[in-house]
Image (tube, rainbow, N blue to C red; front, side):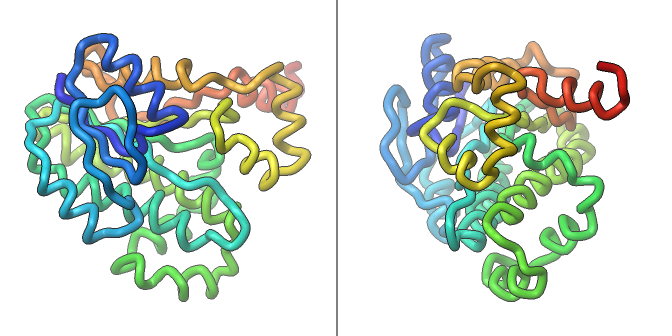
Length: 255
């Protein structure tokens, strides 16, 4: 396969590159930092829409899979950057490479368990989707009093909903989209989530015993990018070590 991937230099993205390269796949990476193990690297800030368009125009397809993994965690004062990269950058890259996807191609996006409440927040997700571009983000954030943690959760709610929306359009072309929603994963940004979530992060980790590994998430992404998963369409697959099941059984009095 020829695979395009954003956010390939570290964490989950680097693990995905490792497993794909081990299988002998050709990899084209888009990242602000240079990743190892790829065949082609386009240096690009995913938060810069013009740069995304230029980088996408500079690569040759067709691509059998597009893995949209680049994203920012919540940090002090970065709500706008989170939405710019995680929402508008993701969508811009998908649109820019749309015409370079091969028949049967798969799109796999990295969402998060933080996006699990998309149904309850669907009106805000729709309002975000309706924005003309990232230039509208400052007003949107101010009007809705969105802090960095809410921005991150909202961005991942967007990914889940966006993935579902793509299904009909892509199915008609013999293509498909899915997303994965990891919980705590042992990457360099895990500390950012611990700071943002506080006691919630620690209690979740205690329940499941450990954080996930990037390799465990990469294995699922590799499967969803491959023809073996061809009948899986429009799905958001949670990978969280069992925290969702434990929370559900406790809330229903089944534990």
